[in-house]
Length: 146
Image (cartoon, rainbow, N blue to C red; front, side):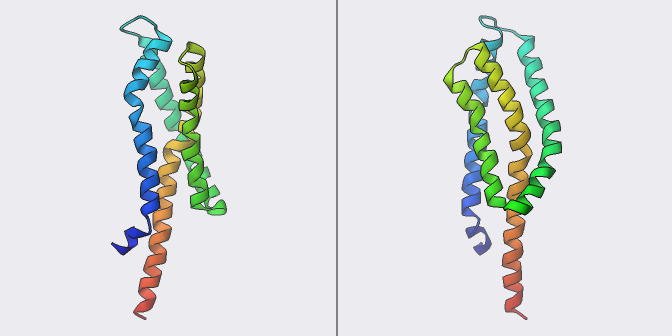
């Protein structure tokens, strides 16, 4: 339990990041429908856009996450963990400015780019940070019994 006490700040950041990411999902469906197909109940374009966004984000995260991992070795885990958390704010900021079609497509492009950078990075960096902390605790623990 002592090991977990040193990770409190990581738990708070990970919780707030995921809470904010998932909190807006139900509203994004209505915003997408209103921007892409105003006044209609059904819209296949919104479904295609959502599928395209998920596919590109997943493939991009597959490529970018190892690069972020290498950069975290050079610049530090905490420093690089602030970047995905900050970048994830930008698409929602664009959408908060206006909900017109132009702003929606700007949000859409920014969401894809932010998703490529953020989706895998926050998990990768969190796990790498926990492993590093755990190794420090284990090495201190093992040296006490030598």
